[in-house]
Length: 439
View 1 (tube, rainbow, N blue to C red):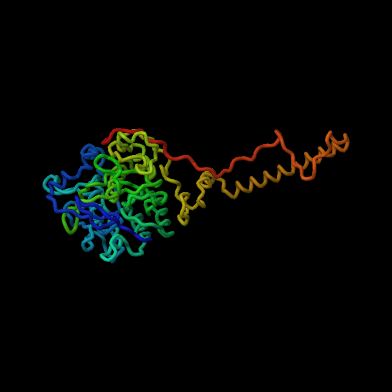
View 2 (cartoon, rainbow, N blue to C red):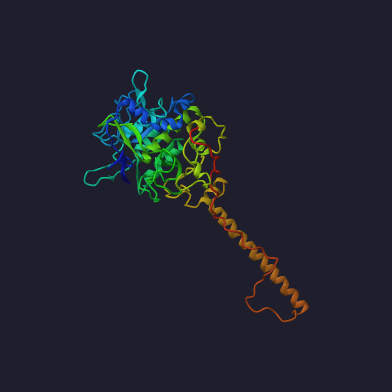
């Protein structure tokens, strides 16, 4: 597929970067922590009393991660680079996007009490760095070379990652990538991706692929960021404006984008997978969806909304509310044959066919039954017509003579044609109760 990295804002400047890349003036370590407004919004101190993500591995498919950064040291596994081979726990030139995402997920800060630098929402989670080439170039910034992430995703699954963060995107998706996504889902891995940063409703992949949790960005007022992509695939939103994170060329950076939003959702998923190890990936997504919130002036939205999805994440509520586990697939379609490019995932593109298969009956069987029923109906009608004609021969024609050739029976004795089985299924899940921002 062709990866694209769009423009991001850094302070008052706009710089070329990745689906989500950015730069910022160097900030002092203590100021960095003060700048991390999402931690205040999440009430992170309360969250960490319930879960810190311990025991959960989050794969970051991105630029290799600088495992020597003081805010990440000890939390980054060796991983694998699909760019140049070897491990992916070291910086790859000046590329820092992967390091930034890893820090928002599992940064632990530094200093005597860990109060300096970037702290992630799941500071005890482990990062599995999986280096892929997102392909920026000076000659054509924002566009990548033809590359695939299917092998990288399968590697992450095989290494035991329970959450995979994919803060990148492109306009298309290959069959290999669809198959890798289904491979991950069949191994109970939760996939999270940014919706994109071009303020359009055209789908960006992998975020728009069924089974992937697509995340948009909100600002400090919890309203959707003006450049956040939107559409029917968006499930959740999370902070993505004025985000401090770890860097490579400079120790810290400041940026906007749905990459950061996806990283925060991946971190929230790690918290939940640590707290509720028996829940499936879909049930983890369900807790995030059922506890999501909306701004006060948006509470009348019909959910899922094209821009907000089911709302912005509230990790504390997701960790502490009494939420039924729900079906194993949560808000997702059932995983199937990933060679299909439609929402039914290998069931021919027809959502109703997916429902029929779940009930143990194929679409072909339904068609066969319908055809058989039609034949029986024709036979019954023929018998009725023959009987009537014989009776008429005995009793003479009714007043007005016989009906003309080709006349067909009609009237109250005939059943209307049944409705087509191919109907749009109802949306899942029902709109979650709106709660105030924060918890």
